[in-house]
Length: 163
Image 1 (cartoon, helix red, strand yellow):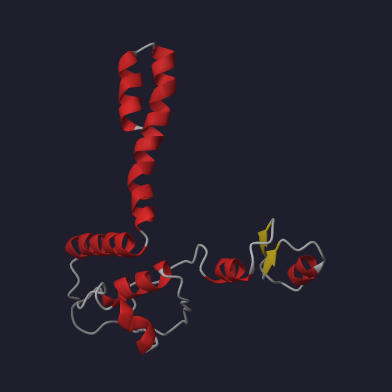
Image 2 (cartoon, rainbow, N blue to C red; image 1 turned 120 degrees about the horizontal axis):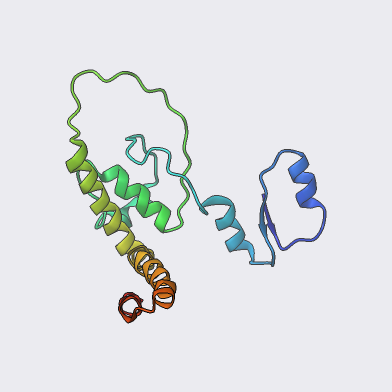
């Protein structure tokens, strides 16, 4: 349940009944409340599971960015999540594989990483920028105090360049 800036007892009553509560300190309106309740921090249990059910009308706009091969499941899941479309996971029974797997862990992991990065760049490029810049900003934040403590202008210069 999303409590969107409310001050009444609804959240307390819902929590007592076992509901998970997401709180907004101020009223962020209807659409943002729905997003908080459905997509925020959504866990992807098995991005490569082949079981998919979706509306043709929803998936067709993503065809130019969705892989036509093994990574169809990865890219379609990411396209949905990055475009605020809802995903629901249902448990299914798995059985032991018959035959040998065609998955090559190192090669396929690198390919999956590439596909994830491409999907983020196409659907929400600011996230990719943040992922690339965050380590540089963190390192520069560590170098500035080191420059002050050591008196070294080199640490200050490198920290400034990273920032």
